[in-house]
Length: 169
Image (cartoon, rainbow, N blue to C red; front, side, top):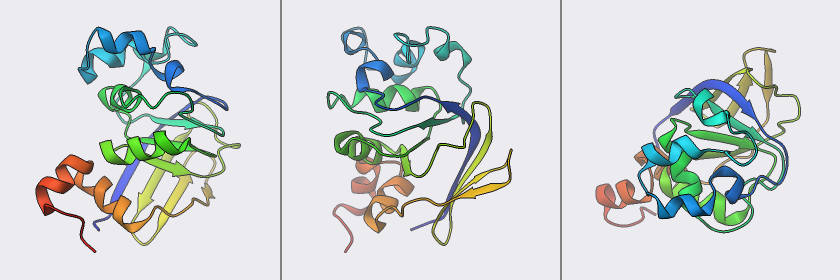
């Protein structure tokens, strides 16, 4: 496992953000290209959001992020927008696995004191650490299992399998 770091501006949403809020399911009929999908991010709840995203932004949410249908495209659209980490108090099981398998870092932590625009630093060197550089607060985060960290470090499950051919035990 190699160390990694994600730094960016917090983009804050609440609880129960379902996959259809992230990207409407009808949009996957238009295209599966991440660069096309990015323009429709959160269009149902904030039509201006997609235009305001900057590469490196970090999505911050409450509990049950990614609930609803198991659309992998809800991860693809975030990655297409340059978002490579999501901090939430909890994830739906399917979204969490889709995130890891596609190289999007899902971090379970207390997000209640993170505000829109805060500068965040998510670091994994000797354990997962989240720091709010705006407030100076360090936030405890649940550890991500080793195999998942290896998959994330490789850029997702497909690049991991290309490199190793099988799961390293």
